[in-house]
Every structure is written in C-alpha cells, then in structure tokens.
Length: 71
Image (cartoon, rainbow, N blue to C red; front, top):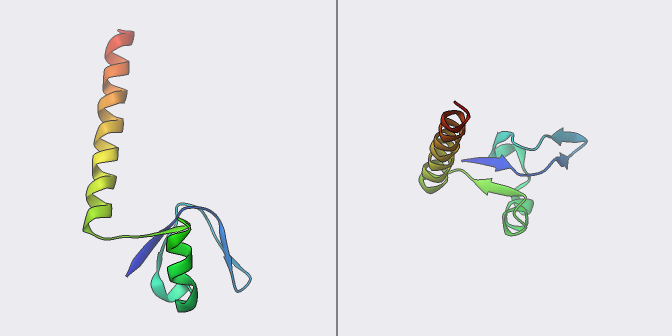
C-alpha cells in the first residue's frame, strides 16, 4: 500500500518530502491512522488515482484555454 505525503514528515531522523509517494513500510504502523486523520498522508487507491487524473486533465484544459486567449 502506498501513501502520498502532503507535508514534510520526519520519521526516525529521516525527512520525507511533501509530494513523495512512499510504501506503508516507511511509516510506523501506529502512526498511519493519525497521519491520515490529520490529512498529512493520503492513501493511494483507485479513487485517489481517478481524482489525480481528473486534476491533471483540468489543469491541462485550463492551460490550453489560457494559451488560446493570449493568441
């Protein structure tokens, strides 16, 4: 299982940077629930992937529209 890190996170003297994708084994089991509840990590599942893909498409469409308006 993988998680996206939403803000820099220090675990056992190791800093995991915001935006990183990590395996669940890199996060202590006892911390996962709390970190998810706080929105610090997000579980990557099919819903996450679908939402992320939609964001990328929306960003691309918006960028394309802005370029069209400049011409």
